[in-house]
Length: 182
Image (cartoon, rainbow, N blue to C red; front, side, top):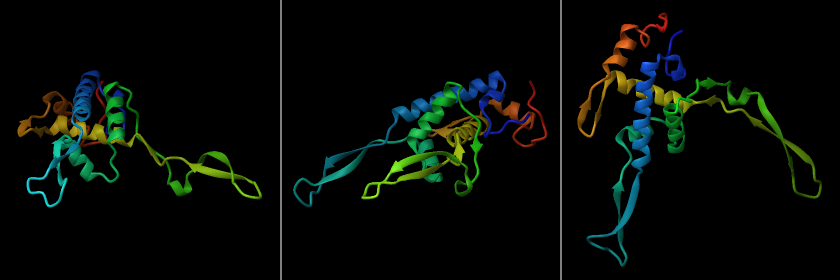
């Protein structure tokens, strides 16, 4: 069995799993404590009465800003949920369902239309086309941080030698034909 970011961390050995959990806890705490906050301050050169300017009081972590800019429709609440699941060891495998247009319907919901002729109308709700996508994104992000290192507040944080040795010596991320050594 090979591991990639589409699979849960439960497939990894315990020691490697713990490094991912520790990094997820750090990212979760960083994201919870650093929330983008803008305040209004009086303008230095007011153009009219009660003129205010926007001032950044607190900003998002740089890593989150980069993820936000590189992913369309990126949501903070889903990021928090995914990091929480990884931190408490409840992350799930990525599930890709068929296209929404051809998706089987999860349920049919009866709805009554208003008007003279009240009819029972059935609305079909399609399945979501993927599940646990944010878990996958954050597992991949943590994998990159652990195996390649990163820059935090202008300081280079080196890669984790144990995690890097596990993945690259076993060639799990480069060659899918290898098996996870247990």
